[in-house]
Structure formats: C-alpha cells, structure tokens
Amino acid sequence: MTARQSGAATPGPVPTVDGLRGSAPALERRPVTGRDAGSAVVEFVAASLLLLVPVVYLVVSAARVQAATFAVEGAAREAARVVAGASSPEDAEARAVAATGWALADQGIDTSAEDALTLGCSAPGCLAPGSTVAATVSVVVVLPGLPEVISRVAPVGVPVSATHVQVLDEFRGPVP
Image (tube, rainbow, N blue to C red; front, side):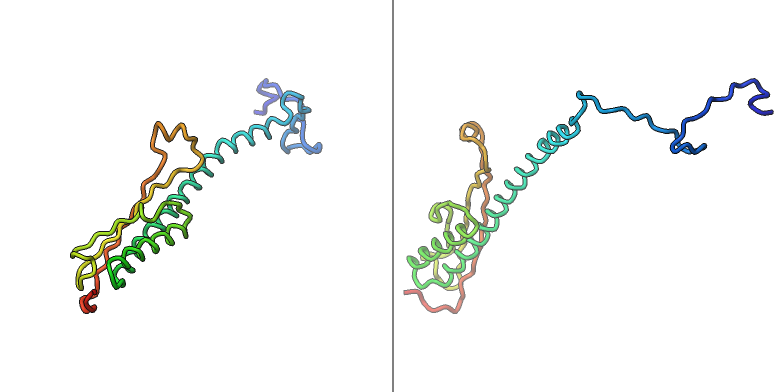
C-alpha cells in the first residue's frame, strides 16, 4: 500500500539547493540587521581580554618567582663555596656578600646582599679544616602591578629562600 492509497497527504515540493531533487533543503538567507552587525567581534574581544589578562599576569608572576628561585639557589651555593676557599674570616664574609650580590643582580633581584645572606658555621672562626659552612639566602618577591594600598592590607610578596652547606677541606692549611 502506498501513501496515496492510505489516504496520507503527500508533501508539497521541497525547495532544494541548485534545483536538484533529493539534496539538502535551501537555507533561507536573511540580511543582517543593524542590531546584530559586529556583535560577534565585540564578544570575541571582550572574552579574549577577560581570559588573556589573568593568564598573562599569572605567567609574569610565575616567571618572577622562578627567577628569584634560581637567584637564591645560585647565591647560596656560591657564597658557601667562596667561604670554603677564603683565607681569613673577614675575607670569607666579604667574598660571600659579593658572590650573593652578583647572583641576585644576575636575575634582576634588587635586594641588598647583606640583608639576604646568612652564614652559619659548625666551628669557631668558620674556617677550621673539616668544618661546615651553611649559607642561606632569602628574598621576598613582590608580585608585579599591585597597588600600594593592597600591600598595606595583605601580603603581596612571595618569600623564597635556599640553603647550601659546604664542607671545608680536611687537609687545608691552618688559617692565619
């Protein structure tokens, strides 16, 4: 039994693309009215800014903290090494402060080396053969772009520190 015989109504002609029967129906094209013109561009720019600005800030902040981490690790290691090779306690401290300052400045950290460096020794005088010297370097990385008003209310810095322990050579000569 066919559709005509069953009494069902047959559909009218179906509009087609390029006049071909059996292909997809033609889409109705409407002209863009003045209300909707350009709204997609505005929405894209707004959404991009809302997503892009926080991501860029996060990347910049993470890069500053990572640079400070590299700086304090290198500064602590070099400070302990120069103390281990120094000939007098005064010379050891001066060299350690200089090495710390260079390592911090290399990564753009503008903290005073004297304030950032702490030296600890296992023996009096710090240069006894077989003793250890520990150099600790600590800095606070201030997050970029935050107004000063926020720093009065909440902490806006990330503390970063590193410690390196160096064993002095057991067979080094006596320190004058």
